[in-house]
Length: 339
Image 1: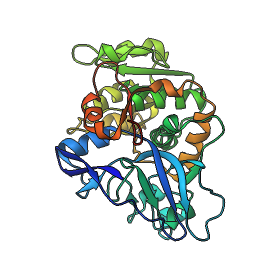
Image 2: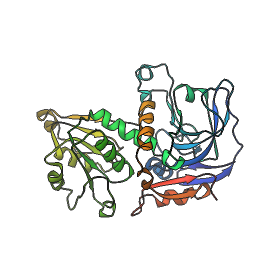
Image 3: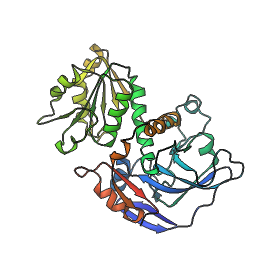
Image 4: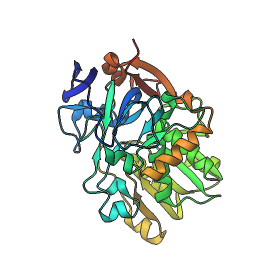
């Protein structure tokens, strides 16, 4: 079968490798679609602290069941599925409390285990036991199903923010994750949602009002569409200035969610957090339950597929990574069996 391996930062190679065997109690998935993520681009360029090389990247995965192992029930060959990328231990406190994304022993497809940029993917019994292989809801196609994992990460951010109906939300960054955050916040009942961007080319076809940050990044132009300051602020970009700008938009008792890894150290006014009784909270990855909610959300959202702007075969994965971040480009999908 064909797979794409990252041998070292900057060295991506399509390679013929043996097709994996179906594990006992697990499944073999024929990968139909794998989304490229900003994390994949970062690993390609710089590596990642969770990455071990060489590695088949890709953690936004959907496909069809090719084989089922002995004892597997509830899944059958030919069934369309989406894959939750984490494999947690199931025994630690985090796992027992439903926070398997924080399991200290978690292994992640595309990071510490080979991922979905291959024609076939073997998933062990543990993936099924934790609910990580999910039949697609009726009407949801394989390409769109790859958005479940990033959407689940957005749901986790809003869960950590304890977003309540009627609250106002400001999101920095109008890429795929910013747009998913905006849609999820609207679904959760936010009274107003604003997307803030430094690149005017990303302000087209937004699901919420967009505000261009010009000059020094003064976010005050977002106050009018927000009808004041925001109870929840989410920087969905690596620019550390978004944290500083976000604090300027944060209402008393508001919550700022550190959703993206930052390319630098932000400036923090800790006295503002103190006097405003504000909260700074982290959000990393997603849980199995949030992944399930995301699939249900996508099945009810007919416009989800519009976030996919480029589809490429597996051999052109390098071109897909190069295309990320270009004007007008949103989600890039790799279809491993496409020509």
